[in-house]
Length: 137
Image (cartoon, rainbow, N blue to C red; front, side, top):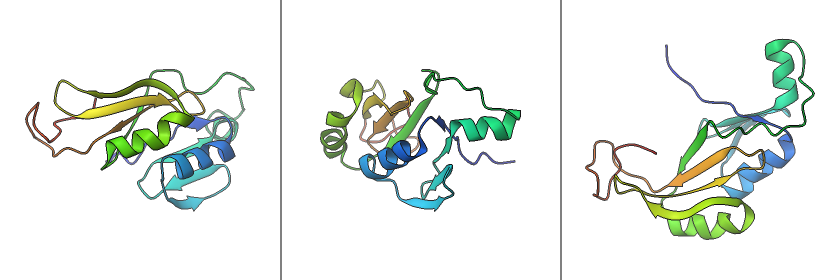
């Protein structure tokens, strides 16, 4: 068995497609209307149609899907450029900070309230405080 990818539920597929494509720069691999797969393996699915598929009925809730219990993690080679591009368009959790293991990251909410982290790349197995990363937050 192998893990493939998480699929966050989104309330407005068009808004989320645009957010991840234009704001985060992800390239679309497949777009099925209510399901979008990006080249990185990240995917989003329109919430009510996915509820219908999984449970046989949509919940009809107007609550945002992001519940603060999942962090979507991405990396960017130029963390400052990513922050400058993204920060003015999102609700920030915090600006760029250095984690205990040495990696710099910033966090914010996507349009559905999912927490998103952008971190600078690090090499697996690197030591805390070095230029590499031992694990994402």
